Image 1 (cartoon, rainbow, N blue to C red):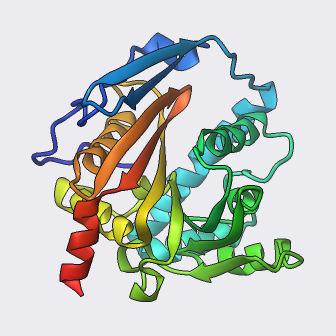
Image 2 (image 1 turned 180 degrees about the vertical axis):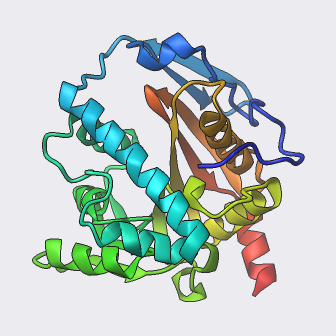
Length: 285
């Protein structure tokens, strides 16, 4: 991950219909959960819960493994470029250990994302940055058809082997910065989790605004985006970048923010494609 992008997206500002949920360092380890949701009249609703997020001691080791993988990708990117860095990571199997059945935190995170989906069923879902397909496979519990896209062909090849018995789960190679137009308008749900901050720097406001518009084009009218990113301590560099990512999408005219959730170690925003995005898409074609 990288530092704060300069620009004109309001830093740590409450996007329309919501409020800022940045919290102190102690809250990253607390059991409280905060949800900010638009109430339809431009205001917001705050709710707090006390559901504990259980983590095993093994999770700490897997967190450290993730950090080592991130550092290795950063070094490889400087030598070989972004795509090659991820190919190198996936050559070692499951780089972040996301598929480890003992990884309690990751499993609970997948369950939380599914639980936040407002509809019971979706027709066609796109999982951007799908890796080995662990989240994409879970999305089939709520979807008729799921497509996973990842920058690393090695990840795509492994995912196809891991889930070969599932006919309505598909994996393709693609770069978030160069998604093919054939995907546009083909989905009623897009999941974009833990992906944007792996883009090569600089991740500035111009890039974030472009991504907000580009991702909206993937959706059918009224389609939904689940945006999720790591968030550790509100003052650290990586968490500030994650906050900027969520702010950029929430402030974009392409989106209407439905709800913003703060969970220990990550943020989730639920956004609906706005009519303005639909008009922009028609104009662009």
